[in-house]
Length: 115
Length: 116
Image (cartoon, rainbow over all chains, first blue to last red; front, side, top):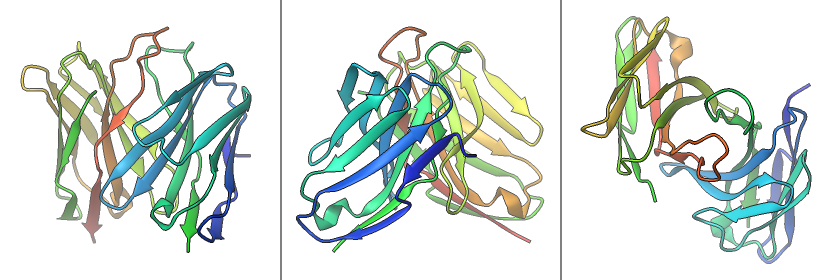
């Protein structure tokens, strides 16, 4: 089984709808991240969480919210989806306590289309 | 915050040739520089990284070099193979164990295509 899973893998929705993307991990990591990937723009950080009680905004948090329900679960919500939120979304995890570097482990991604 | 620039955005090479991808960063406090490979339909995966106290690191056909003075680092792939075709991302971080600062700043990616 994959260590970092994302559901759904693909989603098509309409403008104005509320959407939730879910991420679960079995790696036991403290840190979790949500990124957005657009062609030519690379990976941009939306939100990150260093533990269950810690939530931080990334550089493109407007229009998004998150919930860290447990160490293993980190959800991303679009309260009212708009077409320019059409993108590939990745969840990632990393472990604060191990090693000397901060390797991030990415999920397989969710392709979101907002019509 | 940190700004990471990556060039080129696309790179095509013949199988067996070498490929070089270059990145620059702006924050002199950055001390950790990983490279990620993203294959089609998958999430990025770490392939090699380097810390600021090291100038070069090799792992089989891939190597990374770091010039702290010039604030640039590069990925070198030798003897390229078709399976090296992917998107490659560089990143920079001011990593400190126990710190809340250690998020990654990514470059925009390079699409590498290796032709048989």
